[in-house]
Image (cartoon, rainbow, N blue to C red; front, side):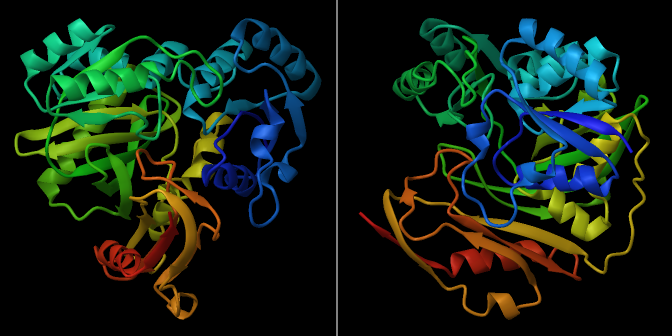
Length: 415
């Protein structure tokens, strides 16, 4: 059994799934945070941090002081690995692993994967197909890049997550407004100063997928491909996912080859990865590489279909173990999640239409916000009103069922 240091986490689903996965893999963890209060919001069931061997506090945003502190912790507690589910701390985790000589991906590889413009530059240089792009730092350069690439373009910050402030723009005025919106957020949700660079990209068209992989000792194993449903234009909000995606052999090969190529180009090793790709009529185009398990409960979809728990795999890889990636017959051919995406502002009065869901064998999970919750139109993946998860034996059937259940809801918002 390994002792893992968990540096920060998300407060969403992975905050529960990762601690559970660590325990299921036979490990224990100590939790390190700069602000314990960030995690003490109400949630159903026992709080996931109750399973921590130790809860520790340090300034996780200051690597210069954090590394010496973690060295002292390591001497006292003895860590076998270090991990996080929060994108903003993945470079910190890589730095700690390198400093302590623990397993994990290299610092430079993680830094490049977590900075969207560096991912573009590294993967483009390696010949991985992606959209035309430009890295800009001011409005004049952004306007020139957009005119060169051709409207519509996608404008995105290089260092935010969950689709935050990612916008498709159609003209110069919309581009200026998008840049103003990005510039108005000088720090991220964890108090870290934001980068000045902005990406202006070709708006590639086609269905979006994610390729879920584990790379260990230089070998990348594909667990599967997830189908993604997007909404909220001009934003890019994930409205649902289905695993596995319904694909022909050629499409599957094109997506997985692109994901492997991106992981190789970045130099990622000893990590779980979630690589997002758009399949255009001209072939796959890389969107981004995330060196951690997928969010939005995609790992639960995969577990229900294949029996592989990517949260537990993440823990094993962090501890230097070779994970068991052998699929097992679960009797489930398709699993999907669909989200209630708000399009109006006000206060949630009621969500109706879930009657009978608890008795429906296809519905394996559903959870919605309580009446009285503040509601605003969704602009990213952090503003859902709830979700339903469906698991069925028939391949490719779960996604349409989950979407129809969400579409059948009546959501009352008081303005």
